[in-house]
Each structure stands twice: as structure tokens, then as C-alpha cells.
Length: 361
Ligand code: NAD
Image 1 (tube, rainbow, N blue to C red):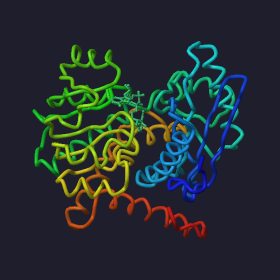
Image 2: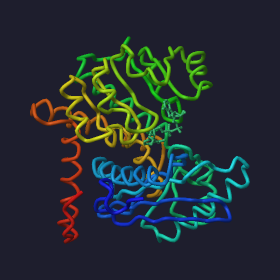
Image 3: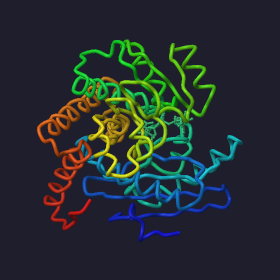
Image 4: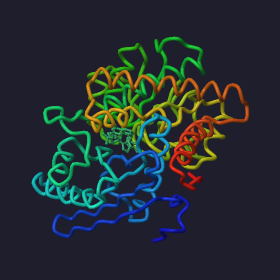
């Protein structure tokens, strides 16, 4: 397995491997950058093809968190965890594994703070809390802010509306056709908001039960998981895993807007240019999906309440508006470049304040 030579391993502050034979925990915590503050990023539990794939994932995700926090104006750095699945099916054993993970987080002395991500839940974070205070996304009853996903969905919903306004010149989502890929914690909440706003929604997921539920309870249409890129839609909302925008899918897309929650939606950075050339407005993932991070940051500061969280999440629409306007004013610029520049401006300012010579993110 290559570590240092990996394209995704560039300037990480630290990458930490944990192996706890007693509970079966195999985790990688990647801390990309802590200039703006401690690295905060969720824990993904996923069954990877191999360890190399898991490492690539955590390295890309942790870098994305640095950019996400910077664009959202938060005093947080970028980090992320992947736990290599499958997880124990026995609930008691699962709790023990997450407690062991809590010890791993604690060993980093607060330079990394965790939360939920794909495959992990509020209950898992409660088990982590037994061993460390460096955990967010805890239940409201014990002083937390609950599941961050509805706040992520709210940010995506607002951002999607801004993108539709810019690209389709439509003031409302009435009859706008949206494809939501991934009906999980974020996807379900987003679909509810879209349906309430009058959008017509096509859904796809590898979990057939969730597809049936979205069709019967929320009036969605369904498409096969491997045919999503052929759908006749206005907006594609990726809310499953990353890498779905690539050289194979982009030429097939019929949508005019991409606006979704998934991290690392572009397989390669060049895909941003392909989208632009194909007349598709891409809402940069780490800008539009920052709602959950904004929410857990308030929890961490001890100032969380729902109204304040919703108010702060509303700023995502303003950031996207600025990014889309910058791109409209400069024909050569992609939205990916515009958002990366926004993040780097803030990181450079922090580096100057702290007299750091770090200048390559
Ligand atoms: P989740 O695990 O609750 O849901 C993911 C869904 O995607 C599941 O229903 C799964 O079956 C489905 N899926 C997986 N592979 C698929 C495929 N190939 N085709 C179709 N569906 C597929 O996860 P979530 O918390 O809803 O997060 C969704 C995405 O948003 C992830 O990329 C996550 O990193 C990102 N994100 C989540 C949050 C948050 O607050 N939860 C915040 C920021 C970003």
C-alpha cells in the first residue's frame, strides 16, 4: 500500500492508524490541517474493497473538511475518520468497538474532534463519549445537538434553490425535476423539503426499502441505481457516496445543476471543467454540505439552539451566491476554483496571523 506517494496525501498534519483486536476496531484518523482550529470531521463506517481504498477515502475527506470549515468561516481545521467495516451486528459489541474508537480519539488530545458520517449514528457517538469529550453530534437530552443531517439537508436545500435561480432563472422549485441519489439521513430530509416546495423528485438508492418508502410516503418516482445518469432531470442531488461525477457520467448527464450533500462528488478536479463545458452549474460539495458542520460547531461552543443553527446554515446560500456570481463574471473560472480560492484566502490570512510558513493546501 502506498502512503506518502499518494496524490491525496499532500501536506496532512498527521495520519493515525488504530487496530484494537479485542473489539475488531480498525480505524484511520486523518488530520489534514489545524491552522484555523482543531480538526473536526465525522466518522465513516464503510466496508472498503481494501485498505488502500480506505486510506484514499480518509485522506480526500479530511482535506475537504479543511476547505469546508474555511469556506463556512469556522474556527476549525480539517480531519476525518474511516472505520473499516463490516461493523459487528451485535449491538453490545458495536458499542464496545465505538468505545475503543473513543480511546483512539482521546489519544489525540483534542487535535481531532469526531461526529457522525455515513454508517454511524447518534448512538455510536454516545458510546464514543464514554472515553472522550472530543465528540459532537450527541443527543439533545445530554447537551448535544442531535443528528446533524437535517441541518446538512437544510443547507443543501437552500443552496439548491440559489443554483436553480442562477442557472435555470426559476424563482421557485415548482415542477423543477430533481434526482436525489441516496435516501439516507440527509437524502430523506432533503426529499421532504423538495416535495414541500413543489419539486418533482426521482429517487435512487441501493437500499430498495428506502426507495419504496420514498415512493409510497413522499410521492417520488424511482430509477435504478445504475441508471441515474440517464434521467431527464433539471437538478442532480448526489446524497450517497463520492466520485459520481466523472469522465463516464458527465457526458451522459441531462441536468443543468448539481447540488447535493455527498462529499468528494468530483472523481478528479478536471471534472469541474467538464461540467462547466457541458453547461452544468456545479455547487461545490464542501460549501453546500456545510450545514452539519456549522451545527456541531455550535454544539462544541456550547451555544447551540435550533434557531441559531438554522440562521447560521442560511449563510450557505450567501456563500454560494457569491461563488456563482464570481464564475458568471469570469468565463474561465469554475465553481470549484472559486470556492477553493475563497477557502485559501481564509487559510492564508490565518497563516499570516499565526506566523506559519504553511502555504500549500
Ligand atoms: P447515510 O449513510 O445515512 O445515507 C447514504 C445513503 O446512500 C444510503 O441510503 C445508502 O444506501 C445510499 N447509497 C450508497 N451507495 C449508493 C449507490 N451507489 N447508489 C445509490 N445509493 C447509494 O449517509 P448521510 O449521512 O445521509 O450522508 C450522505 C452523504 O452526505 C455522504 O457522502 C456524506 O459524507 C455526506 N455528508 C453528510 C453529512 C451529514 O450531516 N450526515 C454532512 C456532510 C456531508
